[in-house]
Image (cartoon, rainbow, N blue to C red; front, top):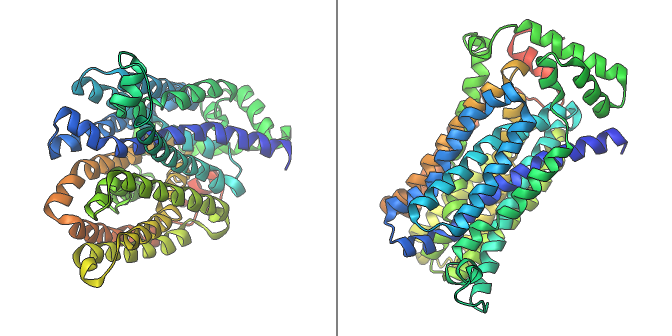
Length: 467
């Protein structure tokens, strides 16, 4: 492996730390819902608000991230997101009221929204075509590692709180023993500070530098990425050529039906993907497991198993996404999701009569997570980071990201209502039905992007594909 590839890998891993924070912040909530609900006497809708408030922040973050990244650069927006994560983690650990806790969760959510747009965009813009899918998938892998990290922290802190012996008048007693949910949320401070520090060691996106007419800086970065001054100049010329074909503002570009089409498709798959069940499992998994008869501790342990399968499967997806292609992974994975979701629905309706134990439910959940991780979870950020022209990429990803986080908010807010009114069986049947339109859009409307440069994908949507 030459120095250029190693350097690109370093840049991708650095940006992917944002994915770890995304995953941790998203999943840590699952182990705190019961504790926070009991402490503040929350009803079902208030519990939904506790889960969903961070998603309100994510919607705000994603709404401004694209435009902000186009104005001040990808790197500075990642730095801002790292700062927001740190403030949120510290605030959640020491907050005095539920209202303040919600505010700090919203601040962290804004960090999630920003990093969910800018980190994969940055990786996509520094990665060579042949490795782009795998490198952007590092971001998704980091998310799953963040999920697993949150589950492990929740499980270990809950276990530790029973035997820890802090002075009852100290902050450590409050955070790690008396109200252990504070420690679960506060542990995010460590990776957020790490992210903030390592970001100072990476350059700005070279494609953004070209769009901003900073050609000397772009030349230096491209030369580091490709190891050749001639290749760097060639890449700058290619980006300039494509930018000249769309020589207008991003909002005016949206009036072009050829540009609007991929933006609408991106919105559709981002929104639909949230109603296929994965975030309901990540947020409410322990509660769902408890409904099957498990104790709280066993439910958290099962959730750790879910997180482990999520990580291992994402590693597999990372290794094959550029070889197999984005669309083939979706066909395989979503088909499996439908089967597993229908099976989970059957479990909650007829499992007792069929003699199915809670272990059967665990197997079905793990198969569902496997199918999700190898398909829609691995593919979504790859597709969104490479579907759009350079000049409109920040705005278009904000629009698609807004749809994604709107869907995530709705599913986080509505899942308690679904479980209460439809029951687990009806809830998972609904998720299975939502897989069908997603599969259709990928099949009929989205081109295979594996192996194509960002400029070639742009030419495809503009109807100027090179022969």
